[in-house]
Image (cartoon, rainbow, N blue to C red; front, top):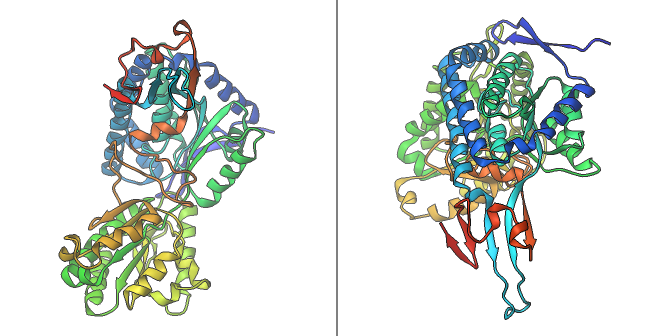
Length: 509
C-alpha cells in the first residue's frame, strides 16, 4: 500500500496548497531514530553545540521572509504575529547557546573524602549527562516557537540530545523548511543531518514514542492526544520521561474591590487577552470569576463592547473550527448560561469571538456544568458571577491544574491590606505561573520563566519555556572514588573547562 500523502492546506479556504511529503512508515521512523542515535557524539563538545544553535538562529533569520510567508499560508496567523514568533524562536536558540557555554546547567558538585563524617564520605563527583534521542511533538498554534525549531528542540539540542520531530499536520511545509535550515546549520559545524529528524503522520507519532532508542519526549497539544502518548511512554518495557503540555483553563479571579476600582479597564484587558491569536493561545483565560452587582455589571459591559468590536478570525484548521462551534453550542444549551456576545461562525471559514456567563453556584458541585470547567479552544471565555468570596473559593477548589492563574486586585489589596496576601496562597496550588493585575497571554522567554503546571496542564513539574527547560533532557550521574585520569574533564579538580561548580559545599564561579 502506498504511503498516504501529506498536504499543506490553506485554512482560509480549506484548499490543498501542495503535497509536502508522505506519512512515515514504521521503517522510516526507525531509520530517523537510528540516525539521530548515531550522531550523539557529534554534540558532545559544548563549544560546537553552542555554535550550532547560533548558526540555526542565523539561518532562520536569513530565511525569514519565505518562512513567514509559508507559515501564514498554512496557519492564517498573520505575518506580524509570525514575524514576532520567529524572532522569539531565534532569541531562544541563542539563549540556550549562552547557557551551554556557561555550563552551570551541568550542576557540577564535588565532595572530597571526609573520614570524620558519620557515615564517612567517599570521593563523590556529580554532574548531568544527556539522556539520548528526544522525540518532539510539534504544536499547531505556535508553528515556530513550539514546533521544529521551538523550545523542546532547542533545549534538547542544548542538552546534547539529538531530536526526531513529529511534524504537526497543520504546517507540514513550514516544518520541512525549518528542518532544512537546522540541518544546514548542523553541517556548518560537522554535525550529521540526522541530528534533526522529521517524520509526518499520526502512526509515525505512535511508532516514535515506542522506539527503544528514544529516551524522552516533549509534547504540546490536547489532553486526549497527550494522555495517549503519556500512557504509551509509561507502558514501554523501559518507560521514558514524557513532558507533555495538555490543556489549561487559566482561571482569573476579579475581586470585588478591583471591579469597583477599575471595572472598565479589566473588561477591556480581558477582551484583548481572550481574543489574542483568535483565542488559540494555551494561556488564554478560559474562566473568569467576576462579582455580582453593579461593578461586575460595568466590567461585563466593557468586555461586551470590546469583544463586539473584535473582527472574525480564522482558526488553525477546520477540525478546530468544528470543535469550537460544537463546544460553544453545547455550553450555551446549559440552563442559566447566557451569551451577552455570542461566539460562533464568522463567515464560511472564520469564527467570531464572544463570551458566556453563568452564576458561579452552578459550578460549585459536580454535574453537567463541569463542561464549563473544560478548555474550549478558540475566542471564547466563561464568566462566572459569584455572590461572595466563599462561592468564588468553592469554584476555584474544583479546578484541575493550570498553566496560569490570575488575580485582579485593588490598590489596597496590592499593598497587602484586606485579603491580598491570602489570594496568592489560594491560587498557588492551581498553576505554575500566578499573575497579579496582568493577563496570562504573553510568555516571556527568560531564565526565571515557568511554563507548566499541575496535571492536566502538564505531565511533569518541568517547564517548556525558559533556561531551565534544558533540565528535562539530562540525568545526574555520580562517580565515586574514580582516579583523576578516568574522570571526565568536567569533574577534575583543576577544572580545565572553567565550569561553575560546588566543591565541598562552597559555590565556585
